[in-house]
Image (cartoon, rainbow, N blue to C red; front, top):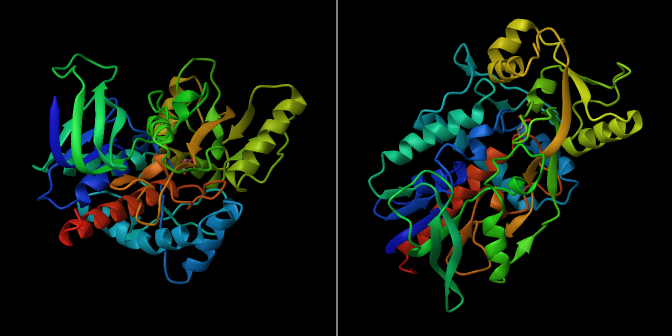
Length: 398
Ligand code: SIN
């Protein structure tokens, strides 16, 4: 089947959804997703979303992001993300996203390598709150057609430019459309997430296997930092197969501490992610064990139940009451800092092709992402892709 549309978006995480919301409503948009609409990593994000709290916060937020990224970050991208953060949060609130507040003021939490609390959150399911709200808004749009269980198999290249994508049926329930879809589009936005599905132990959904990066490589599209993969220090240790359950870094931001099997603390828990993950790995090697311990005892029980109900519930189901006992934790693959190279408008090296979210690399995270910068970065740079497409349309460029 052939479809002709103004824009096609590959992926239904926050980067894809926000792109759809920000494109002009007089554009016809097709959005495909490899699984169901709720199985994106954006839904899983626990800790929260960073925001520049006030003018004075700019320098320290910039420095925290650069330092965590080993100063390999693209400075222009960091600047764009931080300066765009307040507008994005206002926009999210306008769409109906709820962040924790007290007396009408936002409450901020903290995670590793942040020099001050600057993370907005919704319990410990911030990603679900944001993504499900954006999804509701997208479903209200008459100009957006969604295909679930549909995976991109290639892009359509014409005269060196992208003219759309080829797609086929992905694993999932039976659906009418089984034949190859040829989706011709003036603009293509790749928003298909990370690579965790290629790892045995990852916090990501297994269907997220870096398809866009593989296809981009085959077409000679510029890629960047493919070896920059983030390992999250704390996932719940389990012998069961499947996705690893994240124990949010904000738990440590609120006071939780790590212990080895000798019941000794061995690292400052609020150092950058890569440093803490490495320290845990060294402990495990030294002690010949396959996990370390995380204690949430320093956090008052009421706070655990209010701020971390999802973690509390999940651990209880796995046999651990985090208000009373330590839990075994182990590092696991979590995030991909590299990806398809894009400029500051999220445009790739191929004409009419954009990439946003985890599949793209605008260099904002450098070699190691600062906690809770991923949702923000996705939104800021997805918004810029949509804005650039709108400008090109208005100026008659395409
Ligand atoms: C977490 O809550 O620890 C994960 C948030 C993130 O990946 O930044």
